[in-house]
Length: 162
Image 1 (cartoon, rainbow, N blue to C red):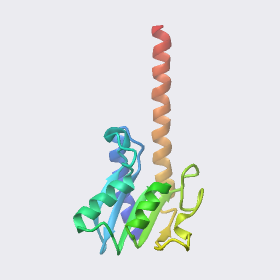
Image 2 (cartoon, one colour):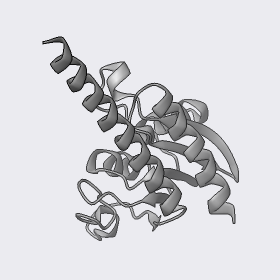
Image 3 (cartoon, one colour):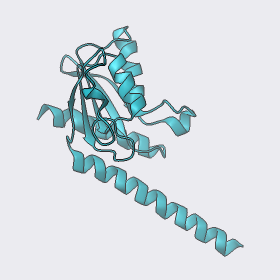
């Protein structure tokens, strides 16, 4: 039940990304059973390839706690993290990461590789996947379907104007 509550809040953040034309991925950081930071995808609008939802939430949480390490914190994200985000989570020393939908193209929590199970790494983070996976995945499917439809309309308009 607790994981569902926080994942729903991450889904709310994903809607913020969609509203800005960004891939709808959202994240929240939880410390002592309360959300202390949120983030959503913003790489297009910020012209920053590192502005993934997870990174935005980690940056905000670090600023709030006044520490680049986030021990005792959990991160909830709607899409399985990529290598960059997983690395940042490990450097932040998160206690736990919870994700929704899997990412078969870039996911590093089991889809492509599982960085969180590498015993040689100096920090181990608990990992839970598949929380509200259907809802998280459906949001992404709807976004990309809408994007494809817009692109088809633009192509049709160009052909009509030619």
